[in-house]
Image 1 (tube, rainbow, N blue to C red):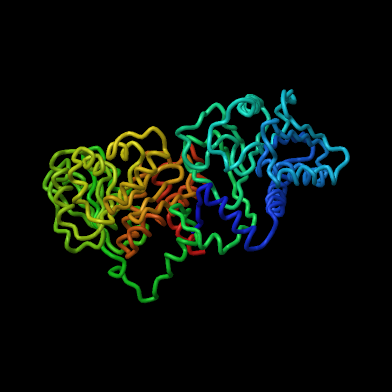
Image 2: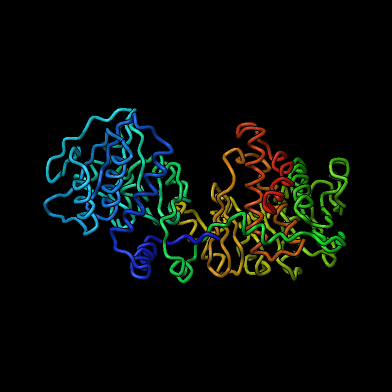
Length: 507
């Protein structure tokens, strides 16, 4: 599990490292600059002109150290601009980095901007290193700094940001000014991803991002609390022990999937296949009577429970035999299906997996929320979640609402997206970093429901089933995209690659 810290906590961890390693602040700057340059030289050639924009603080200190190290790496066309208006002062580390730059090189192309700035002409062949402001920023940029950001953004140069694009806040950007935030092509961030990186409205600012290890003290990381994490393949591997030689299907649970309606039987089929592909020993699918031939023919491995109604489900079967229950894919919103859902909430003694139209039925009957069994797993996409709790003006606001909703109702909310966030009743949020845009396709969510249901039936705790289910779903999608491309990927391709995804977790 990778911890994700707020920018305030990152500052505390820097200070902890400085005092407990111990090292000087400038040594941590040098360490950050060294790993940044190591990554930079692997990406770009010495033929490019590099223009470094440095601010007054420690982000500027990193930028000046990077300028020096690039010169040492024989990047001959490096130009450095340090913005130090008369009203401001350089941080101690920035002052030291400035001295170091001149002590090592005689022919440094360097300009310290204290008043009027005459910008260099930037071409598409140039690389801009953005070190104006880092994670310490707490208000929108204005004045000359805003003008510099706008100038960089209107150029065709490649922009690489140090740690965080200048002008972007590390978490909540609702009060920020979009026009004064750097649009980076790449952000090389230190130690940990920033929460803002996981939110879709910030994609155009952050670009592609990569974490660089700068040796933050491990005791500081271990002892510093956070609500934010990123689930890794190691986490999934540890949660998926090898099966016993004498295992039998009864050891891996019996799942019940309640799904399907006229014209939407495909959703129940996708979820059913994903469920058995994800470890459940047995699966019964409760579907409308007219769906029998479809399911029996397309997926003989599943058992069927047929509703009395031909086109929708209306009657809850006996749920006693089942170790896990999922409901929603292709369900439709017939009032009788809603009554079934309400009855399920009141009769079930175990957590449920709730998706799609089941969520929409809850949104139309908010008084049912209190009846949902504790630690049930809800898997809404953003619009479905907004129907449950009300519209949000930003992804950050929606994420905070999902966190609060999970805590208030003792539920698990899997808020789907590029970095799906699993919010648990203890207030923690687990981000996923697998998956690709090709998974934005019909039926992908039904597959995720099936995966989580299969893991839950096999004996995983709900929080674990949700977290690793999301990771495996995304990993299978990544494997599918290798063979199918993002454009042609369909939900069935994700199911086909589930076996390889599980093998990857074990390995």
